[in-house]
Length: 277
Image 1 (cartoon, one colour):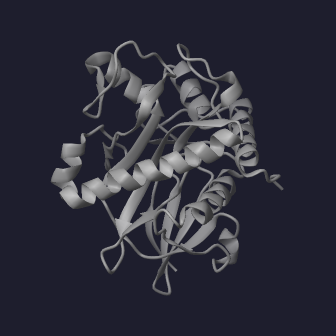
Image 2: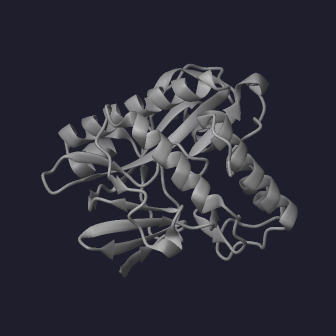
């Protein structure tokens, strides 16, 4: 195999004309990889993504070829995938207002150019899910919110519309499935590419604690930060240290690592109904 790219969390290899996508245990917050890994994180991300990919194939083509035909040293945290030409957009859907979207709303009344009603709070459910894309920043830099018109300028009107529709379709399906299991999907990020025929295909990961905000439905209360089954706990801890969100990130203490690991596993089990081995 040949290493093609090492990202914040995933490593990409070329193998027999395919791609081997390997999820590591690296922990990334604010686009910076922290120096302390989270045990089993890569395996949880891979297992949950595969569970979702099985359930969305009627909505959108995806890149998965096999979860078993991978090198033995990566077993459990790697997927054999189709080669795609990735599109230069982070496709984000939001069903609730929080994080960077809340910051922008408080400043402008909009998120990525989408006007929202007045009076919304941290954690408010939006009238309907919205498409709030962002740029793909180079390593070490931060993604920036962009508008739908910016996406049109990047990829053309037809592709932009398709990306928006697919992102919202996947979000609605995922949010509905998760809510039936007591989990709210506040927002999620998807990545798409095109295959050799030009068809738009879902790549990377889908509806994981790295790419989504997951909240327990029975604890949801707008007007305050929500308990989160994702890396938000690590984000909040990192800011509490006084870190300025630039590399290098701070070492993460064992209790924070253990808490992040426990939350990843719990949300996997609650969404899928499976027990983490």
